[in-house]
Structure formats: C-alpha cells, structure tokens
Length: 137
Image (cartoon, rainbow, N blue to C red; front, top):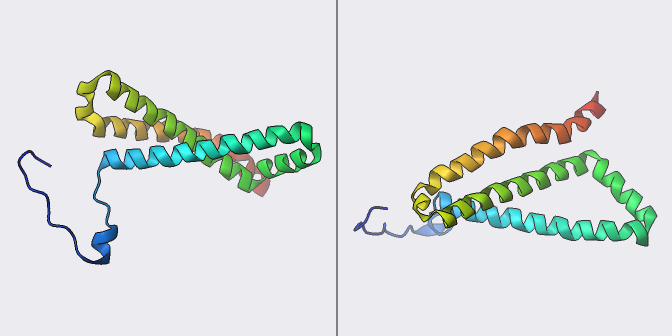
C-alpha cells in the first residue's frame, strides 16, 4: 500500500470475515510456523523411536515397517519438505536481518526460496518416493 493511502473499507459478511488479506510476508510467516511445528513433532517422534531401540525392540521393528511403507514414505517426503522450506526461509530471514536494505526485496527473496525449494526438493522427493513406484510394478 502506498504512503498516504487510506485503508480499504472492511469486507462484510462471512467471506469478508475469513478472506485472506495479507501478502507474501504473511504467507512466509505462516508456512515458517507450520513447518516449524512439523519439525518439532518429528523431533518428538524421533526421541520416542530412539527410546524404543533399547526399551522395546519389537515395537521399534514394527515402527520401522511403518516408516518403510508407502504412507511412511509420503510422511518422510512431507517431513523433508518442511525441513527444507524451514531452512530456506530461515536463511531468507537471516539475510534480511544482516542486510536490512534487502527487506525492500522480501517478495523477490521469497520467490527465490520457492524456486530453490522446487528445483532441489522435487528431485529429492522423487528419490524418497521411488520405492513406492517400484513396488507398484
């Protein structure tokens, strides 16, 4: 919004109440929080499964079978995506903190994050999901 401009009139009704009115910065923040929660949940699950190695080896072996199953592979891919986005967006935030003049280019930096995410993430997802397609043959 340009300097000196006025705020738009609030939207009325249900659509106005739930309509998204933010920009790239708000989406980046939301995705960063969601990916952070996903990474935190994985760390908790990882602590539990490492405990099972010594505490209950049979349960650990069953858990490994879940990880190796097609749903487990999909979850592993989603975890990788969350970790990768969180890391890339975190680097974008650090760059803007270290060089405040670059905050004027936060949209372009966020687009670079997404280009890098898809350029490197899709081949990684293919590698993780490849055993699922090999099982289907």
